[in-house]
Structures are given as structure tokens and as C-alpha cells.
Image 1 (tube, one colour):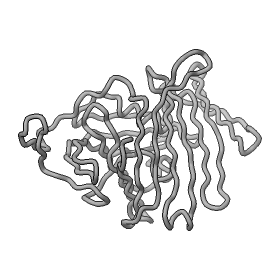
Image 2 (cartoon, rainbow, N blue to C red):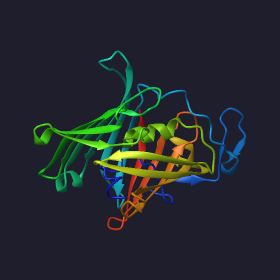
Image 3 (cartoon, rainbow, N blue to C red):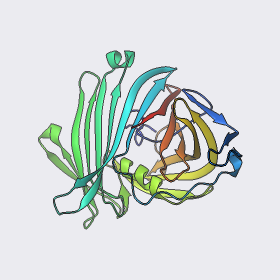
Image 4 (cartoon, rainbow, N blue to C red):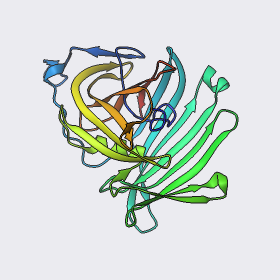
Length: 275
């Protein structure tokens, strides 16, 4: 998954494997309203909310070998564009923590400005500070009339490069928001075109069964699984595996993340706070 999911700590690619890192799978829960027992296998995926929730603020902890190594701080806000339209501003700030901050400091920012009707990106901004020397600072402007994504590299004197895209091409944050907005049921498949790092990936995922996941300090969540697969020109994009769980309620919040890789076994990213 190196190419597609190299946004540090896999910003919201929602995954889980087994029971670890402050989350436990349960066979049932008690419904607060009725007091009745609810069995996981009987739970259906609810219809999503109409539109993204502006003002949403989610905080995730990233863990490796049981140690907290970083955080992801995500926001959704309104943003007035220059042409009078109101866009969604979806942002994620990623940084290392604890011993990892000393060994390999990371302080990254990712911002997507999305059309409210289609959730297609208008602009995507990236600032990456990783290690002692690696610095990336660029923006991507999406021209839907010409089906072109223009990469502007501020680290190279605003050097510009045009990349052809499909009419419905997302960036990675827009793709996640689109998934959160879709009405789905178990067994449904979704295929998206995602532009990332000057490449166009095909990303496919199947909606799995609903589970009950008990999150530390947050309580139980009904969540459905999804396993995304990325391909580039028909070939698998990198090695590794991502399994995913998203809350099955109307808010569709990413719950718990585990990325399995060939080198570092797995990194767990779990929802820690809903602000």
C-alpha cells in the first residue's frame, strides 16, 4: 500500500484486525432506549446524514507495538470560495509523539476543499515535514472542465505539472468523505478513481458485516467493515493490507484503524476523542 496509503499513519483508511489497542469486539449490546439486547448480526447499516457535519473534530491515536507513536487531528468546516460558493474544508494534521517524535519527527498537514454537492475536490494542499530533511509543500488544483489536476510544487519555485484525470476523480480525503456519504448495505461494492502523488489509482472496496466495537472511553459503536484494494493501470498498488470499520449510524465516523505491512507488521489508529 506504499503508494496510495502513504499519507502518514494512513489518514482515515479505517481498519481493524482482532482486538487490540483499546477496542474490543462484542457479540451484543444493550439498547439504551428499549433496554433490549441487540445482536451484532441483526444490525443494519443506517442511511447516512445529509451532507458532512461541519464543525466535526475527531482525534485519533496511532499505536505501534502497543506504544503511542502519533496522533491524527481531523476537522470538517465550511469554506467560502472566491466565486461565492461554500465548500467543505476537510483537514487532517498528523504528527509523531513520544519516542517516535525523537527518532523520526513528523508534522504533516493535509487539506482538501470539496464541492458540497459532489464531494469532488477543488483543491488539495499538502505540507509534509518528515525526518530531519524531508520537506514537501505543494497544492493540487482540479479543473473539471478540462479533466486536469495541476500540481504546484512550492518547494521548487511553484513549478507546475498537469496530470490528466477522470471526470469523477477524487483525492484521498474526498474519497473517504464520499464513502461516508453513500447509502450502502452489506455486500455492496464501491469503485472510485483517486488521484494521488501524480498518479490515478482505482480503489475498490466491499461493505462487510456490522460488528459491535467497544472503544475505550467512548463506549460501543456499531461499525461495518470495508477492505479497500488499490490498483494502478490494472496492477496491485504496493504490498500490505488495510481492513476498515466505519460506524454504521448516520454519522459514519471512522472508528478504528490497523494497517498491516510487510515490514512493520501493523499500525493501529483508533478514535480517541470526538470533540
